[in-house]
Amino acid sequence: MNTNNKSSEEVSGSSGIVAGSLEPTLTLKAIKNNTATVLYRLQNQTEQVQTIHFPSSQKYDYVLSNDKGETLKSYSANKSFAKEKENVELKQAEVLEYTIMIEDLSPGDYTLEMWLATDEQYKQSINFSVE
Image (cartoon, rainbow, N blue to C red; front, side, top):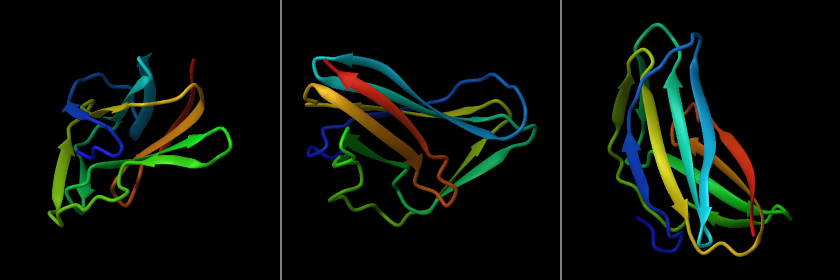
């Protein structure tokens, strides 16, 4: 965990299916005490087991920008990750989830862009404001 970015993470899984592809979503869950809690989900909407290939111990990355487009925080900045490859299998309807908390936010408008640290990134972004 990087104390410079003041982030924490959790991983969990769940179920539910529609059909088609691996579907990423990024949801702002809460803003409390100048901390934004965000949920990134990748759900297997196919009818087959899908394998996600991680080339290192890094599972995701994100960039937080202000309303001027200036990068304020980057998850992977000033971090090193073990070169341990890992494959994660997602069965039909399974979900890969990462919850992050971005702390010490000043009042203002932000854009968060988050993606998996894989070849196919499944990038998503959201805009939010801190009062």
